[in-house]
Image (cartoon, rainbow, N blue to C red):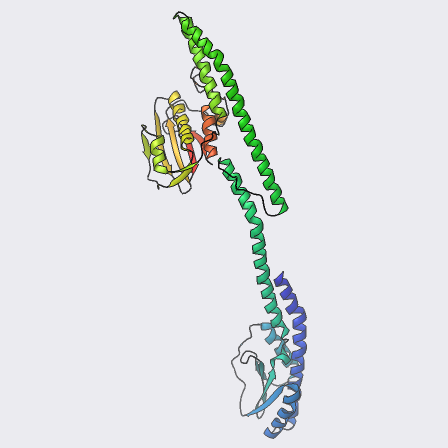
Length: 406
């Protein structure tokens, strides 16, 4: 916008004013040159100077036997030289030369005559409109001031949005966001308030889910305990042993349901050394590690250990061999769990993360579990801002990749 305003001003208003001023000075130079040619003497040149200098701010000096300079220096604003050259060309019939850059407040104009060179020195205000420079100064000043105001205004509006994004990311990782307060524009405050209401509803839903499943588990454990006591008093027969196995399986299911309900947990994040966590989480297991930079990361150690344990136990259930490896990139730490089992078809790999989902075609139906291991592991990974990816393993089975941001 400022460039368009400047272009319009210089090409319309200032060019027109400057052209009129240049025409006036060129006409004075032409008249003075014509008068001198009628009486070409040094004395008459002095009279012309005395006549033109006081009122017209135009001095005249005769340089006998001099010639016009051959060099030329162009003004920063080329339109100024162009306008003056056009005016002199139209008004003066003899060769001329001028310089608008040598003196800050004057214009040097020279005209070739038979006796030498007539040198005219005119005030710059008579040739160019001085308001143009003032206009440029205020244009640049206004641009800088408005740019600074715009930057400050945008920062004041973008900071609350960034705070809202950080609070949402922190809440997604299960971190405390009690210090977050909506601020900024009305729309941003409304979004922040809606986010806090959503957070409250999600927390209430999680609490209700935990309480419900905990209550169901508690209520069912009582009759299960009575059944176990009654079976313990029965004779040790094949039917009795089968009934005991069924009761144990039901109790394991209840434990799994309760663990799933407590998936979010109440463990607070803590900063722990990355190498110490890897060593403690995979203690007793053969681990292939690449060189990685040891640093402190904010995690829930017990929950993340449980996540890794679920991945490893899931691999050991369906395979004979399991291998764990660790690598690191600029932004992520990745833990790979490879096995040589039957694997999972690529089209069904997302389905295994659903609660209570079991793929009987790929897995043995008689295997223990209720289909919550990978679902709980994925919840824990997402709670830390990471994810679990399933792919083909070089061992021929399944590769589970736990990717956590650093």
